[in-house]
Image 1 (tube, one colour):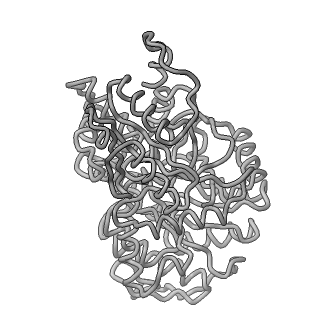
Image 2 (image 1 turned 180 degrees about the vertical axis):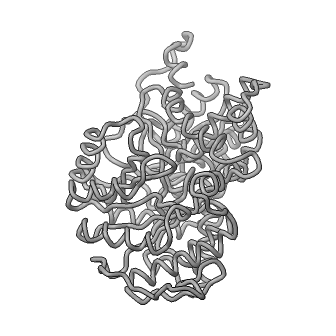
Image 3 (image 1 turned 45 degrees about the vertical axis):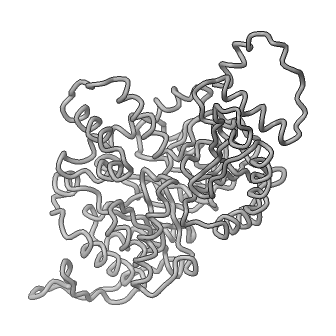
Length: 462
């Protein structure tokens, strides 16, 4: 895994000095790339040229250059110039934007996006390879017929033999196209829990082109919003304006790709209410349930990385239905979300790759995060139940469950198992932890005195 830093839209919050200091510090820390954006304010290319002069190693990416705002030939010219200015560090990220910006700002019709994107990329690649630009397509014709136009070739050569082209895509067909024709994918509102579905679409597109994404070094480069705060709700609140802008207002009621994406994630009601609030200012019909849905949505599309920075080293959490288990255990790391289609072989390979690539302080650390509950029964053989989307569920006595956990840790190549017990009753949850601790042979500091449970302890356990 490589880290990049996205400085977003220019002039919105940070000063020029702040942004430059941020990028230079990221380069010093070994970040792989820096990315800039554009909508209908600052353009991305000018900022990348400025950063090229102020840096020496970090790669420079556009996320994104708007296709309706530049001809394909102009995009090739810009990419080649930035590649020369940076000494070969350019990553060309492009996207179709949306109908409101394409038609309202750039005066370009928004339609036939699959054919338009395919042809645009073909022209850019042809121009960057310094071939004479002759192209006959459904959307583009170069030179224009019956006119004085002449087939030209790019006057300068990029430093890289092949500038990588990443494409921003949201819809299923567009994502398939990315796997077919691009070097990388720029997803937004990326959810680790749904990565297997996106990967299937990318693989289907790659198969159409007769290639393998693994063999070709294909990159998935999601933009992930991060808020580090000891107060989890305050951290979520810092994320809400960005989510509201895109889910509620970045598009019309009839066509908003971001809104459609979170609906596919299962948040139909929240997506509708956010859009209504943003476009109409309608009051929330049920403030409590609305707040709960939005909290869950913010956690999902932020990769469940909301919370305190308490880790001294990165950790890999193997988890299924909810990567937040790792956060609830008081750790901060990266999550490998799995499901039934990701068998132990896939997870073992992920752990091996993580250990091999680890360059941080101390030793690499891997935890298996699982969900469990403790049944209110006197039958010790059925007291505990533990499950997750990526592993077979099992139930039984505390000792049997501990043995199963030990086997799973060995199977997945992890260092420990972390169990999140879900019972709402705090005393029942503490009882579940006690049973597991005893079965695992952990040293328990003191016996139960029969006194009322410590309120601070109960609050912490909750």
